Image 1: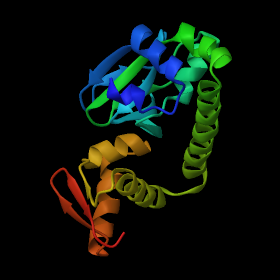
Image 2 (image 1 turned 120 degrees about the vertical axis):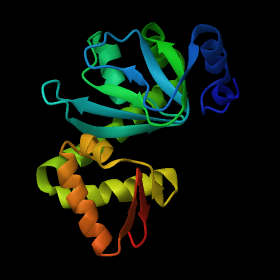
Image 3 (image 1 turned 45 degrees about the horizontal axis):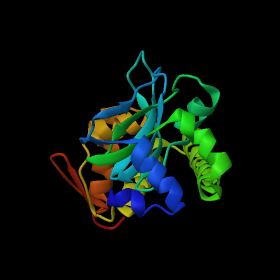
Image 4 (image 1 turned 135 degrees about the vertical axis):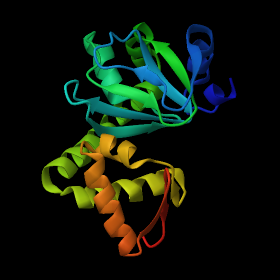
Length: 207
């Protein structure tokens, strides 16, 4: 498991991970965690990317919380692990991804044994806390036009690409709005020379 060996953690801890944890591969859009699940493992992304979001069970609308990239884990899953509670969020693979599934029993045990793992957990809370505040600010203080612009810009920077393979419905789901609203905004952006719209693809031009 070369991905485990590349993690910035103690060698003894990485050896324990290899013997005690399971590595699973998830295809793009495959569910990893559903709201209401009782978490028995903490997922740590070894390769790929995971989208974490809240879903309204009545309307089906979603609100994007954050992405988890290689070498990272999920704060909300940590909260569920520490509190022995059910998951309050859902997570799906944003692309084909390889995850290390760490039994919750070891999450806290390793904090006592390994300084680097303890720092990793604390840093995860700090990073995700900042991202959640950003998501809250977006929802509370910015209109959907600005949120759509920021979404495209963040996606481009995170994936190092100017071609965004997302449908209008995909973006609407992540931003908690409707496809009609997103289509209107994207059309206005195209008319202003910011993007070029193709089927299932948005090409950034002057964004």
